[in-house]
Amino acid sequence: MNQETLDKMRQMRLLGMYNAFKISMESFKTESMTTDQFVAWLVSNEWDDRCNRMIERLIKQASFRYKASLEEVDYSLERGLERNLLERLAELSFVKESRDLFITGSSGTGKSYIATALGYRACQKGMKVLYANTARLMGQLKMAKAKGTILQELKKIERADLLVLDDFGIQPFDAGGRMNLMDIVEDRYGKKSTLITSRVPVKDWYDIIGEKTIADAVLDRIVHQAIRIELNRELDVLKNSLDDMIEILNPGGRLCIITFHSLEDRIVKSAFKKNENPCTCPPDFPVCVCGNVSKGRVVTRKPILPSEEELEYNSRSKSAKLRIFERS
Image 1 (tube, rainbow, N blue to C red):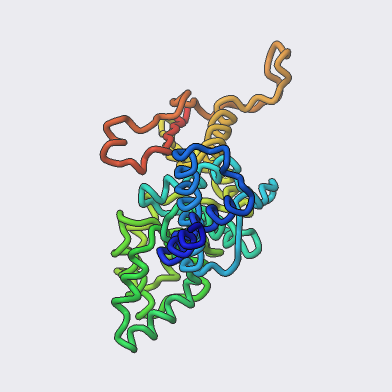
Image 2 (spheres, rainbow, N blue to C red):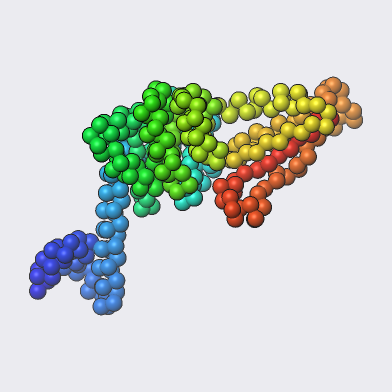
């Protein structure tokens, strides 16, 4: 009777139940269970087995180059990678909100590994992911167009909850590549999330894409609301330019900066505070003797955050913080 039940479970592809029931027969593990507990145990094993097989299928379909885990990410200081930011991204709210993510930095900084690790996490959460080297994908789409299967390929890309475009901008886009990129961006805009890694700074993507009209259309859709991670101290550009921006302000002029993650905000907050009170004298000195003069005042003691009204129609502003400095 038990063997007949096992055969039926296998024929119905209830593999989780099959393995659990087989174990129960061999180990007498379920003798102390009530009927309800035994059925619940079988169903739980079937559920876990189906979830695991679904994850394996999603990972296989994603076509990752290698396995990666967020638990193995290197947070050493020289990389400029903030642990809190990556842990928030690991919750995948940016995917659920159809928000894009850019990871830029020089070669060897771990951009692809982080992108792949986030892709693996998305698969583990039941999301459809597609990983592709950008140049190779453009070549595949060119071949698909020649074969007459381009629409099917674009539809496959559109269906992915998270599209990972690795090594974006390694080579400039030709006319066909530009049009395919435009189609991908247009199909996914506001509906799906795209993760782009590149050794080329975002400010130079315009030249990589080429052809003004298409470059404008593509970048207008993906850049402004994207989350950015800049590895290998690229945030130093922001840090080193703040003093110069304050210096060129006219008296009464204001510098307003919106940041989208805490590392950027910390840099801006620190620079504004230093320019308001540049004194380096010990705190117990009765008078200042260092000669450093304040360049103005911080208007926003606390950052201005988006209102509930704005969040209702623009959920992507959730992480935005506005700080203002006024020149004296």
